[in-house]
Image (cartoon, rainbow, N blue to C red; front, side, top):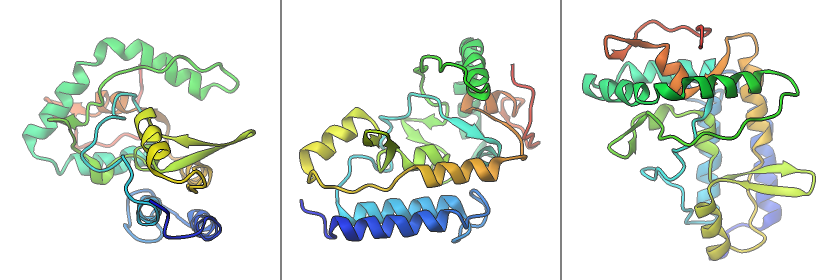
Length: 230
């Protein structure tokens, strides 16, 4: 299917979204144009409208097997949403996280490597996201930025752009969409997450945040943006 916009027009639209990202002052709080999550969702909607259909959509969990690194502000939005979930759902999420405890040393080593300048990256871990309940994302409305952009954005590399998504999603694009397909660049949005995060806490893998916010088998109501991860 041909895109409904020219590549030039799509470049202009994505450039304007990138400019808007610099004006966002919160992550998952205001649900308006100042909210980076709201803007990312608008970009994804624009991508989908221009070149439907994409493989990535709500209800698919093909990408939910590599733990995302989550900033404190993203966790703040997640934590607030988690507290609104039914007790049984909270207990299932906590149980899922506890099942991953044997991987705690590996995740902490990976976290420390990410936080240490010039440290070589460690191999990625493969594990089911603890937020998956019955195969569905239980926190979809509050999911982190990386989950929102996955499958719809591209990295900018010295040798060109590279699709940011699963091999399955890439194969779908290559089989069904034109070679001149334009995708938004992830960098302006990732950089804004980093800028808003500065001085607000720390970052860690999603299971680590859950391990430090558990009380009596449920999500603890107490929010800690700089817990002692170990």
